[in-house]
Image 1: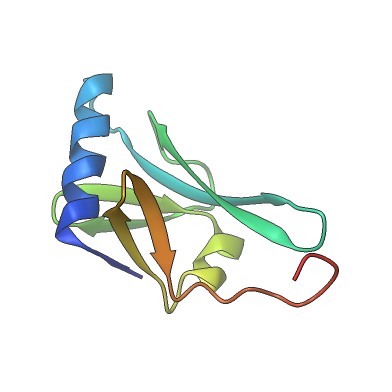
Image 2: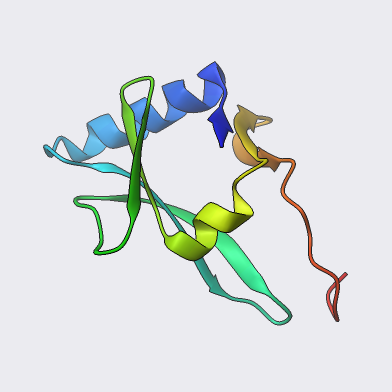
Length: 95
């Protein structure tokens, strides 16, 4: 997983709003209609089993299933939202 400078700046801004030691960005999956959907949230602490990655002073807490999905992904921030470049879409009923 890679993260652009624009995305890092946005994550730092969001984390500063929490003003809590140990905050980070959690990347996790949730059930979708056809396959897992990738989610992001600012959380106060790491969850059991999550992998911790520190990129440019931002801590990312990555759920094991999400880690598999993120191997070739670059997280960017453009057009007022986060983009996951390189995320492979699965086939199935939603494609």
